[in-house]
Length: 253
Image 1 (tube, helix red, strand yellow):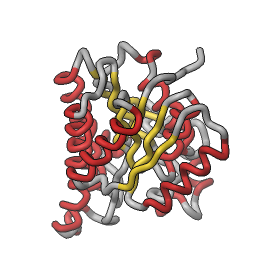
Image 2 (cartoon, one colour):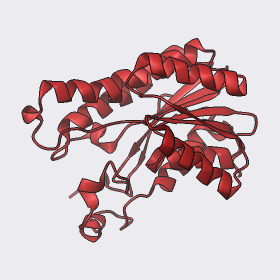
Image 3 (cartoon, helix red, strand yellow):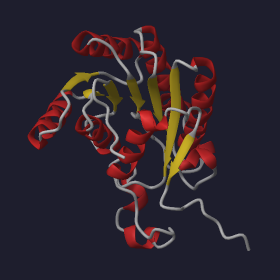
């Protein structure tokens, strides 16, 4: 079954690189008009040029915005609506992790910054998209993490914010149905710049603990994202899809 988004308009935060860029590319290749957003315009312009060079089916536009600033979220959503006549899909992907180490060692300013982007930011973008008329039959997709489903060394506070994203997804699915579906993806360890400290120089050793024996790449998450926002998933909402190479699989004895 070919998954298509013809006639749809999608906005992807954190869209200039990594998972966000891969999702934008998958959506555009499936026929959607796509707005990529991140903080730096030059990186967005390079990302859009790369997609045009690939000859993707859908139109691609960019808008620079700080994903943790509600006013900039509103401006980006307004641009998307002005440029393409509406919005059908919002992908909350932009996130940050400014602390690595025991959770009780984090400074409160750093803790607040993480919450501002990873949690409040997601809510602000949802508010802006719905207020701007996210169309009936539309979809919101939040990028969570398997860290939000358990505990982990070094990135505990980041994982607390991702656990909040999982619950936010459920709550919004309840409140926005039946007009709008809301789902999440909980990636495992994907090879991106954000996660570099967790895999660089030890990729083989880390991958050996996974049933699928490899780390994820951004396209693995993009393919899951395309499914969840497409009509093929029209009876799925409030769900968090784990894409982790089998990391959460545990022997029963």
